[in-house]
Structures are given as structure tokens and as C-alpha cells.
Image (cartoon, rainbow, N blue to C red; front, side):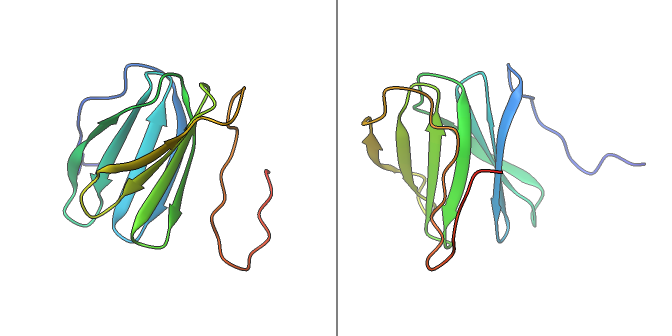
Length: 109
């Protein structure tokens, strides 16, 4: 198998994945989110805001992404600019999963 593209790996165990359209985002124990454009096969960048292992990633349509971590925080990201719009810190413990689907029952598997 030929290698199509590769980039620097996370500095910790891969703990979360999320995808929508052409985007793939990975989260890790290194507290980072790495963003990839799967159509162009390039790494878009790294998001650094969590203060604990990233545990959950979910997309809200093609405009927003949610990420959760062991610090109990949930970050809301604008997918077009990758600006952080809000950090919610209401949870005392880990955020194990996220679901932002309209009209769909979401549950942890």
C-alpha cells in the first residue's frame, strides 16, 4: 500500500474522532485537536484549548464543531475560521460523549 499523506502524530493516545463532509478531526491524550482536509489530503492545523484528554468530537452541520475533554469543558468551534466561540465549563468531570443532531435520539454506545 502506498502512503497517500502523513503528518506529525499526536503526542498521546488517540481518543476521539469526528468527521463531516471533507473534514476529519482527531483528539488525543495530548489535549490537542488535529484538523485534516480529506479531499485535499492536507493537515489544516491544530486546535489547542483543552486542559485534559480530548474525549469527544461532534459536528453541528458544516458550520460548527463541539469538542469535550477530561477537564469537563466543552468547546464550540466555528468550522469556517476555526475560531473558538465558547468554552462551557459546567461539568465537574469528564465529558464522555457529545451529540448535536436535530431530531435524532443520541446515546452513548
